Length: 191
Ligand code: GAR
Image 1 (cartoon, helix red, strand yellow):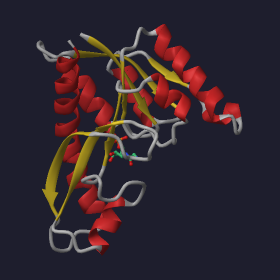
Image 2 (cartoon, helix red, strand yellow):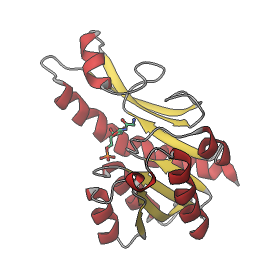
Image 3 (cartoon, protein in one colour):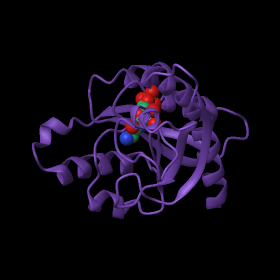
């Protein structure tokens, strides 16, 4: 099974969905380690409760040196024999150095139907545009922001009276189906 690391910054609900999926008998990936750039991310507590190794690599300890922070993360990835990296609500921009090291082996989930709405505030932007559907995308990470090749997407309807919060919740529920499916398909394709 493909040894996968999950990088988080927050609640880690996508991370939890991936960990649960990794425990299916036929799962093609296992979760080798969960890493957060925020030591107080609640997702770390969730992962530890699920018996997954966790590590915080606090970006604040590295000042403005983004690459030094990433080298520390990369050392953790090496220590755990990681083969694939899944970003799941990891809210730091990556430097070309880390992206290059994991070229073709790093996935991200983004809460929009890319190429629509890269970046932040995706749900407010979809509502402001009057879109009839929203959704989420799993893509390979390249040097652009939310720009790499799309692996899979799932759409959800925008409903009357949606707010960014109600739409975000509907998209997040779709993310929890999409990410395990997309990561499993990706890992099956590696062999
Ligand atoms: C998810 O909606 C994810 O798509 C989004 O953050 C949320 C994390 O939730 N990611 C981004 O916006 C990346 N720029 P989670 O921590 O509960 O998985």
